Image (cartoon, rainbow, N blue to C red; front, side):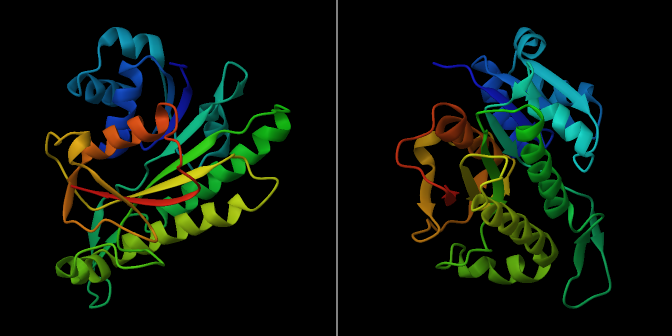
Length: 257
């Protein structure tokens, strides 16, 4: 198996963290950018079963903000070249409760996905010119169900929860996805192909395994209730961070269990 270089944003989050753990165990060279101390990330990876040897040999953990273009460029560069793959899993922020019937719950940064994705897209495009790179990385994005332009991809029972309580977070995810889609048509974009995974409601279980995960597309979504973060990370790794599954194309994929 070819060992890829992977840049991961949002690695302290559950889904991206589990994908990273699988990649490190398999020997891929991974680079991360986190606001918190890299020691926190390393402890999280050890708890996910990654050996100290794999962490020391395969992980470059940087500390900084994904809105800082210079730090993003450093994260995207491996051995003087652009990484092979980018995984975007930013999204978890501190909830803010507010006196509003329309948006009772917000985030400390309600535009975190949109602004960090814009920075990454800009940095990746500029690196193509600065490094005179002949290759472009593939971009993989962790998003959510409930924001599709196609058929309904979430249970009706969850509709009020998704479109009322989580409205601010989902609006941010939608804007993030729009940035990626619009960039995909530009010849000056900094990535080759893109995939978006829209997971159903995330849980903190141990995972049910790859066989239990049902996969759909935006046009033909699989509708379910929940999925463990461990399963999302495993699915991303097996589907995209290993050699990409034949037949997958640009667009959004729904997963649930």
